[in-house]
Image (cartoon, rainbow, N blue to C red; front, side, top):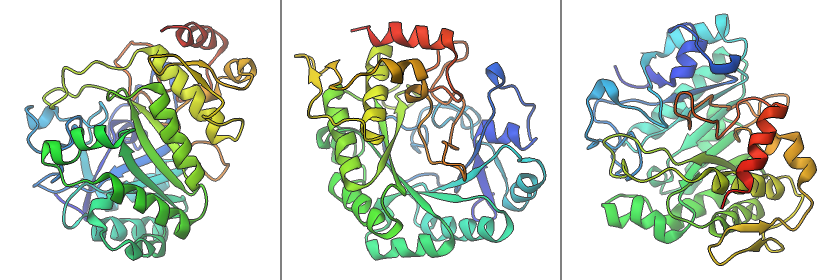
Length: 339
């Protein structure tokens, strides 16, 4: 069962399409269909934190990615179920892994969705497989209107340590950012999303400086909170404290929405935000800065809401897949003060 005839979809997508019983906490509604190309050989990269690492020490049936399982289904059936049952799904995202066939197969799958469904389509690309950046045009021609690029690490040192030479991985920091730049030129300003993982060892200041860099290039940023995947090289690395994640979420929202910049923000000696440089009370009360960040649907609101992809069952939410309620906002307000 391999691509392009088969694809992996997230557990939440499997529930939304009727493959599994739907059991969404607090009646959260999945609004984006996330897919990955799949091959028996797996991913050739060696990212220390990733559940797709081919040498991960865990039984195949227990493998996860971004905390959840990704079952495999025939592409024909996924498209048919999307058109029949996927009324809540407002965007499709087709993701690559680092595999020699992934780029061509991703484009084949994108074309199928363009021809057989009416949802906008994002492509989550692996720059390492696109050495000739002019080939990004093929992704647009296939039918994607947006591109996601998982830079993940906030600094070149952390990138090298967890994704590049220090783990014998193929990825290179400079090429990833060159790909962001070219993708913005081709797809247009803010039609590119840079994925970043909070909690790999960076300071809040370093993360917000990287968010500012992406924004200045014309790319939005989508945040993930580090989650230790069992059997990965970083299975014992702790999750970031809630205070750290909340302050980065709020800072990202300020930067990405043009309310302020990183330069006027004030940081303490540990690189933690102590002042955002702009009034934040109304933003906190609104709650949107603490929702999942991702590509939008046709209405301009986030469609890639990934319910509970960063959360342990029963634990407080890190990315809210819906607008936080007043009691959620009070908890967030408390977490923002944690140092």
